[in-house]
Image (cartoon, rainbow, N blue to C red; front, top):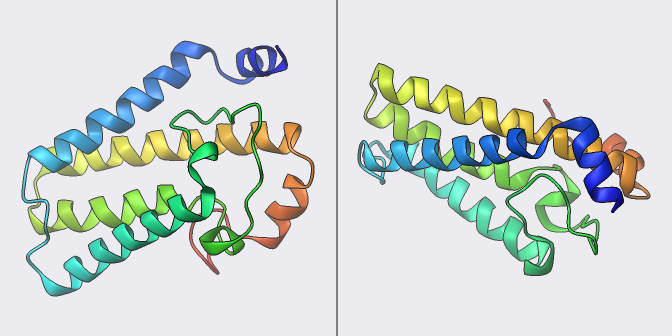
Length: 155
């Protein structure tokens, strides 16, 4: 029950659903509006780094903790290994590292707008997730002080 109460205090369910919907529609539009493999070698390396980071983050998180919603599972376990040792949101960073090279590779205003919408959804989800985890998970505040939110050594 505390999940629902806190959930409603921060954002209503429809807002969270809308963010998830916006994230997946944006990803789909980027994927289906151009090649999914960057043609430029530098962009391809960045894209592959994003894929590897995403796989590493999933492995470190373990499937029982994975969730699309920013609201953590009732049995959430704070992971501090793998990429989570340095950054708190490596899966979001992985999405960014995968999609930005694709947008640059086949640039259009449409794809740029979609990427901006995707970034908007991800940053709002990060904000919501951190607010929830800070209030509900013992040790999350200390973990925040020891790690970067998204970009190592910068943010």
